[in-house]
Image (cartoon, rainbow, N blue to C red):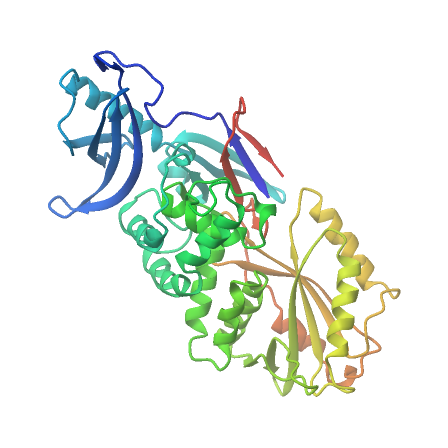
Length: 466
């Protein structure tokens, strides 16, 4: 998990004094309450509708601000509309200038992109305000941190707000995907992750009780459903502009579309909100289906009501696949337990060889070293794989700096020499089934668990932590 912390900046005018904004009853203050993206069809250009409030010690005045973004990233005010009569002491010209300046601060993005490619890594470049055009090809993170304090909690509008950003916010994009692909995926995602589900995840972790806001603090370790609840809420708010987490979301959405109509695919969708690891099961199934290898989802093992995750066929050989997500933090004991649990749910002699696919999830900077140690240990003759399990396949999934669909890498295929079904296994079949789905990589890469987490913190500088 990568956390980016920055100075806490006031996104509004509250608490600040402005010349000619003084009334008889004290100093006037203003703050923004919401922003929404629209399109001005007359000029075919996107605009942002801003709601706000100006207040004195005794009165409050509501206003709406219409703005449009210029080609250089700056913002231009189109008009200011008062919902109620503005205070007579207000210098509206100066107030308008103050509003647009504050709005400009509100909409600035923190941006990260890849620089020079190194051996297994890359230089990382960071700026604020706007990603340079020449850096868009590897821009993997853009975030409006100053939006986090907006008091927005219209959860029933969550997906509509996301849809508006896809259409009308030029800063929002899913790196490596076209708008058409994003919209196709969104149709599936909104049915799997309805706004009520996201709100419930926030309500479980919010200090605001039954009225959580899109920008409420939400720590990754607080919930197994942090992804994608965090990403959906903060996108609806307007904060997330580019994030690797959205690549995983679009991968899920497109996989759902690709498996549409495949028998038992609906069971996978029901599991996504309860078991985040199901995304690996779903996405691998869609990939194998596109390659003509998938022949079954949730097939019976032959022992009671127990099932395997996938059934694939290569040449004339069928293989049952079980997919499990593991962290690289002490995975050995967990893997042994899972292998034995799986073995107990299989018949004495499985009809088809059972392949146990381990998807490693990142948990920190030392993952590469831990992964190697784990793989070496499982590969050793001292690791007791149950006889009913024919092979263990260890792999990872990640998004690289070119974006697009999630890449899958096979780290190791370990055959069980004591397997009951060893005569039914062809190593060439396994290599083909689990062949890496990419040829080139642009660093840095973002594995499962390396999504970016932004909060407003009173730190003196921008920091990146793993």
